[in-house]
Length: 234
Image (cartoon, rainbow, N blue to C red; front, side, top):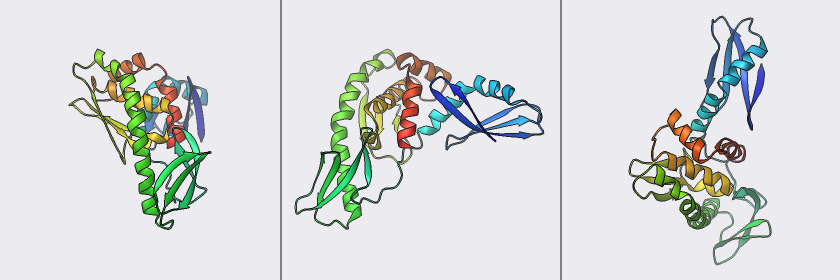
């Protein structure tokens, strides 16, 4: 059976099953689904209390797995199709033209290209456009948030960005923050959250309790922002 609990601004849905066992078990899967296995005869209310007591851990596990699921549904790159940019939906409008460009206007992302049938090339033009926008917005947000690192890291952190298949961002031991260009499709608030998340990794290169304590300290509404990112992009 399916059930749910409320944890702050987060609604945790889970699949509940009963089995011959002595204790309740909770498992969070890579797709962020939650399975709860309870002893036969357990009351639903008692189960909910137990799940709620583990809510913080569940959300942290989902947050960890979320970093590996940044891909939006496959696109066909045809006129009328919706594409995200900074959290808003725009319709794609293709134009046959000798000169190639991408422009944002009137609720549309206009793509001008010679061959309207070459979907791979249209995709590449859009990716180049997203990257050009990232050069502005990623750097602006990174420079605004970089002072957070002074409390946890001695050196000056550096920023890079590229298309990634498996995560929103990463932080290496040399102090470089890497962002997924897919984030240009998310609201600025969500990009901000990922940057702060990675800046906290300058001190803790893991998802330990200490890491989440630091994240909570420097970015108290991280759970709500993470949920927004998940709803829009996964």
